[in-house]
Image (cartoon, rainbow, N blue to C red; front, side, top):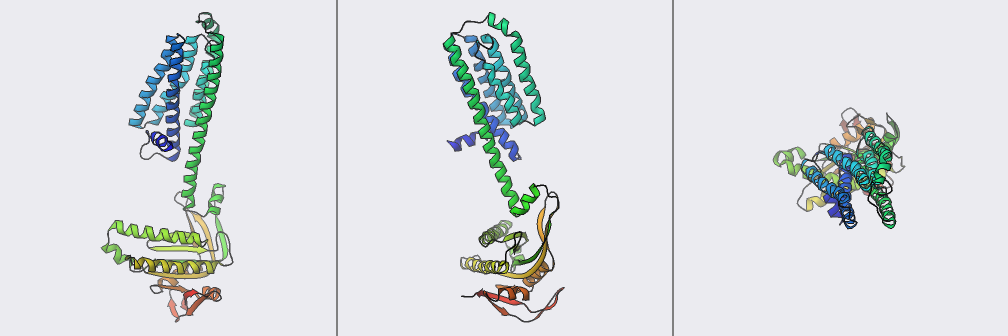
Length: 400
């Protein structure tokens, strides 16, 4: 039932709708449908009471509302749909009250116009909702002024019936308003959660919280982290012989698996650059075992690549690591990015680019941090661009 309701609420969706507009469209669609269905009961009740003129008003509302819903489903134009529904919900309760003979004789059926006053706040911009509330107040005042004349010429309705209608009107308005508010809030929370998740896909949670809190410039110095770069070997030739879909499918599956490993080891993915993957341990929250955590992920990455090769999807990786201080911050105002800078980042990149396939090459300072918990083998001294001669090491396995 929930799936069918959700599918029905999407009748006015159009490509390009943002999450906020989608929530407003869904809310008004459900509201209009709810009131249209309830109008059937009012039509039947007024006919049963021998008030055919009064019965024509909810019946007319149903007809116009259905036309409005069909037009909205075809065009997706929310402004027109909102204006028509709010107008119906505002004017017709007062018309019904005047037909029945005023506030008392109609059991204050104009209370249903409150749905418009509240709904305009939820569905429109705050400034655009003001005229609807002013119109509601104006109609209330007008009804008060003409009420004596309406009551004098009204058809008599039995006291128990009027009391029952008072109860129905109050309960109906309260329940409808409450349910619509609940629906709106739940949909808004779902939309906010989706937006929050998109933000967390770009930024670490502590950084995202600082940005939402109003911090304009985020620039932090981290004295001890470990940076890892991983690159797919011979990826360029693969892109030349494979189709676009195959290239994207491979990277999506591979990097998604890496994301799961980063989450498993408590590390922070920084970014992907082409076929390169960058992850760091020790920030935004410091941790003393940053090198060991990144090393464990590096070994898992090689195991993952090996398993893929066994299933007919050969993937070979070149991995480089370095440990030390970095500067981390957010750059950009629209398409911002959380990034790292410093010698540690450059050295980790050089360890990867000067490494060999199926090898985890680490800098001397990372090798020192890993010596107690992992088996590392010293390699030949090599010239590294911008660093001179370095004696790297190879990460082999965890010590038993």
